[in-house]
Image 1 (spheres, rainbow, N blue to C red):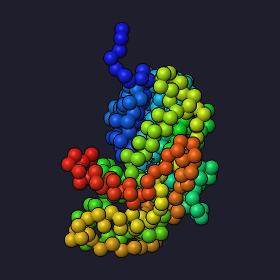
Image 2: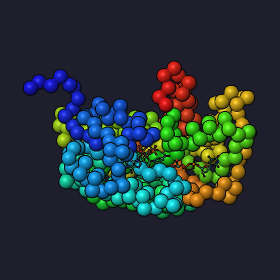
Image 3: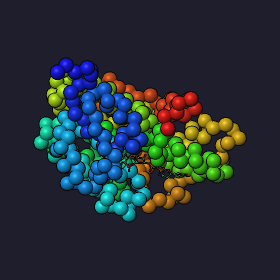
Image 4: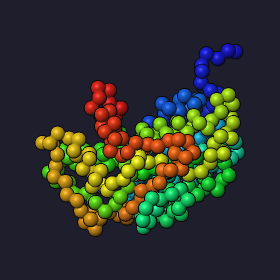
Length: 310
Ligand SMILES: NC(=O)C1=CN([C@@H]2O[C@H](COP(=O)(O)OP(=O)(O)OC[C@H]3O[C@@H](n4cnc5c(N)ncnc54)[C@H](OP(=O)(O)O)[C@@H]3O)[C@@H](O)[C@H]2O)C=CC1
Ligand SMILES: Cc1cn([C@H]2C[C@H](O)[C@@H](COP(=O)(O)OP(=O)(O)O[C@H]3O[C@@H](C)C(=O)[C@@H](O)[C@H]3O)O2)c(=O)[nH]c1=O
């Protein structure tokens, strides 16, 4: 029977569609095939058997895992759950991919590093996480790398957008609630807009998937590995806060005070430096994201536009 759809006959499994990155990914992935995107009520990644059953039933050729346990401080108390979602679930997905001949796209974090390095972290640098979230994420990354499947691990950082839980929305809320906001100025990283992570993922898939043969994952196999994926440039959380608050009308801006990490104690320690080198992504796929200030402006323009994505 003739098909009236131009969509490739490729089955895709997307997890985490309600998250910052997953939400942005969904419309992009649609162009690459038939997407099944269960939310956490339909599929709990902390249940390996249910995850395996779901994946083996749908038999995707491409799995995109945008789900994760991302509550960095809470993870210190909920180690087992964080490990189930961030460490075990990726290994289950990798095992399914191996059986199905599928490829796996996954996201990693700058928090796999201890922050002690002077200079940019490269993909080849050994993780040495300093908190439970980072330990569990590094466990998931390692499981995927060991599985011998076609895979792309995009390692990003300080992700924000107009929905979900992130520093941009937190600062906008604090600006409404408080006269003064105190923010650490001795943790350095690269804020990255969630939409750019999704757009880059789609760009890389476009370059690696075979348009004529939906099941052919040799392009991803050849390119397999970790790719740092952040906006260019870097700043402290204080610098990021400053840029966010500057976008508000002057009379709505709280006072902003730079403080050392010692004055903002949190259950989970964070790396002092987690700036990632983005050269590999540029060399392999010709992709270089805008600087973080420009990306923030683009994102904020979306917020004031008539049809906000939030
Ligand atoms: N946020 C950041 O700053 C950074 C994120 N990353 C990585 O990027 C990826 C996406 O992060 P981000 O979009 O920010 O994440 P979010 O916290 O915005 O979203 C997480 C998603 O995972 C889902 N999820 C959580 N637990 C489960 C579960 N047990 N079963 C099924 N689904 C679950 C959530 O569903 P529900 O809402 O229903 O709980 C949600 O859809 C993750 O791998 C993360 O580690 C990397 C660097 C920085
Ligand atoms: C809200 C707030 C935070 N801070 C500090 C606390 C912390 O050291 C730093 C960042 O705060 P948050 O807790 O909002 O961000 P955090 O949850 O640490 O963000 C991280 O999330 C995970 C998922 C990642 O993968 C990382 O890349 C990173 O984005 O800023 C202040 O100093 N003042 C404030 O008012």
